Amino acid sequence: MTILTTARLRLEPINESHYERMRTLNTDPEVMTYLNAGQPETEEDTRAAITRTMGRWAEWGYSWWAMIRLDDGELVGMACLQHLSGVKANPLEIGWRLARTSWGQGYASEAAAAIVAHAFDVVGAPEVVAVAHPDNAASIKVMTRLGMQYAGMERHYDLDSVVYRLPRP
Image (cartoon, rainbow, N blue to C red):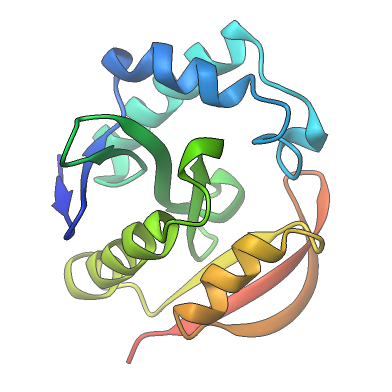
């Protein structure tokens, strides 16, 4: 499984060893404001997500990474390369979820740039997409910083979402 390294982060495939920190992240109401219809995830949801993620790593060779800060080993968030809505026929989606203490520090942009490079250079994706709740200005800022272009509104993950696209260069 692929480990990516950036200037400040180690992106390692999510596995059961990340459960406790993921659980903290997934139960923070502020982190979940624009995710999961604004509802914190249950313990069962997080465990199921880890199982699903590990299965996708085995099947696809990519999925969700834990974002580990290099200087102290802290899990600051998660980021992904996955098929939009989990359907293999859909385009590849990049996404992220960060701990509140890590907001505004550029970690999402740093991880996303590494994942985009991996999607194009290793996976061979013709494009990547990202979706967000229309009010999630921070995620939209990351998308535009990556050079993604607004492509419209669509419904994903049971939410009306803005969609941004980035074609392979």
